Image 1 (cartoon, rainbow, N blue to C red):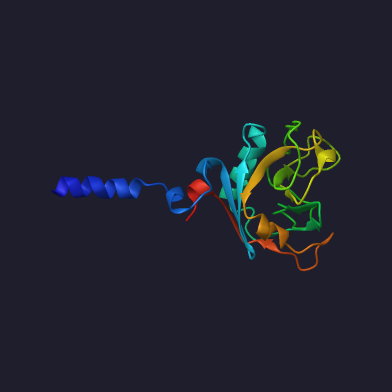
Image 2 (tube, helix red, strand yellow):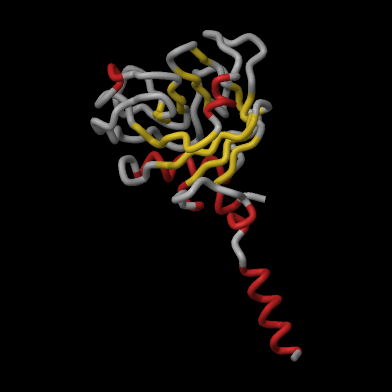
Length: 181
């Protein structure tokens, strides 16, 4: 009887934290980000099939807490909401890691697409990313598609707009779903 209880306890303790977080069907907890805002949670599926280096960077920075309390510093109605400058918070900074080489594809930029921000240099993406409000076909093949919003676009729609944004909304917390508490 004691062995059965010990085995049952071990199995209960071995259940991954992601099992406690309800994810949309088909979401892989290892490649799903949970981005919490004051308006609600945004669930992002990372497209490591399209941009493996960029997906790994976002997961690394997320696990380091880099994105927690980072502002949405550039938010343009009907276009996109940009964030991810955990260094300076104003869109001029990046992370301690080197810039990434472009992983461009012809995957379309449309509502809910998550792309990596960069300067005019193609290989300058680092930590900043943006979520599309609508079609952005002019970005296709010019910017790296890193993911797609699976749920929570209603929260993204409520993010305060501006360029720059006065008193911007923040990423309250961002987690890899597999690590979520």
